[in-house]
Image (cartoon, rainbow over all chains, first blue to last red):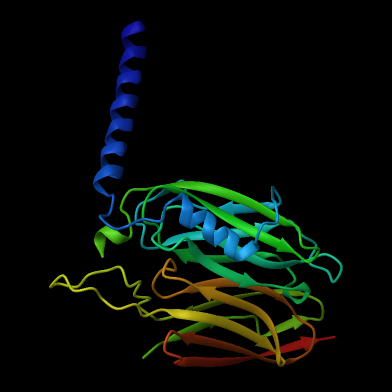
Length: 155
Length: 107
């Protein structure tokens, strides 16, 4: 019994080490966006308005085998009526060379606050989506994904 | 140069929210990649995408190098009146690609 549990633990550790090694080798030798650049583009997009967490749901695969094309869906909890709708959605990456990923403009005529696209990821990271409502409030959601082969490494 | 695919229902009921999928063939060269001789490949991306419905812009997207090649988008719009939906892509140097689809809305 003890042996068996030890074995599973070891195997798990080994696998973790393996994925870690892959992630390290996949690190591109490019200048990646740092926390500063990330905060700067956050500020450029929304100023100093406080950003609340919630209402935004980001869908990403848990493991992205190829960072060159990763499907992403951003869904915002909003009725999308004239009185209450999403005006803007901004997707930001803390690790790509350019923190801004894409910006979308929506309105009550959009009907549903949901956008899907395919993005490039320069490594394992947590993608943040920020939605601006018509009343000016900001809401954010994020989702992390493990990238086994980074986009820049294979270019 | 570019092949464009658009998926949009042909008919819809008034007030119905319809799903639109668009795909345009484009390399979306990020400007960070290097060619076979190590030279930097200049940035060449589609910068903006707009969807106009009977002359009103209903959806707008701005792309950055983080968008994958052959930019694919899924978005929604509310069907109000029969008419044309115009999809426009513009790249960094101002080249545009325009496609139009007709939507018939039954009252």
